[in-house]
Length: 143
Image (tube, rainbow, N blue to C red; front, side, top):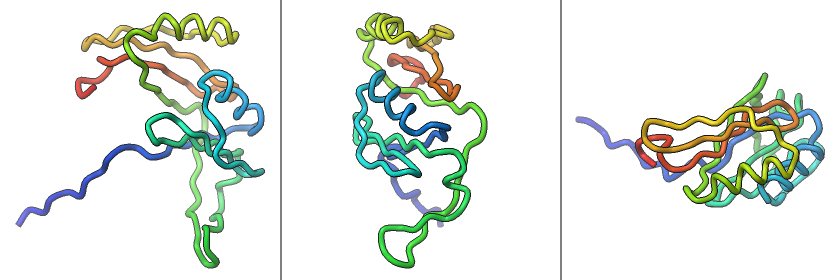
């Protein structure tokens, strides 16, 4: 008998690992308008539209288990090394506004790609060298 796979509704949170937590928080606030939900010396959780969260962890702060919300709870260790990648969805009509915004914020545009399904992506870097992308619909056939 084949079982039905339980549903997943969306990606809730994703993580980047950074050297300077305050510098990274300011970058994501300034460039994307994200707001901090929670911040301590270990991490900063930033609100992303669509009920999503970007977690910024200071390098080395997630190599060991962390306490959970209740005594005895534990968050398993995790870490990413090197330059990671995140893409943010933008509406079709916002591509030129993003080009201008990146220029106004002194963020170098690394690459522009036009995809077979009609989407366009702009690639650039955050202060830790992570590859960031804003992409219009048409990057993937499911969007």
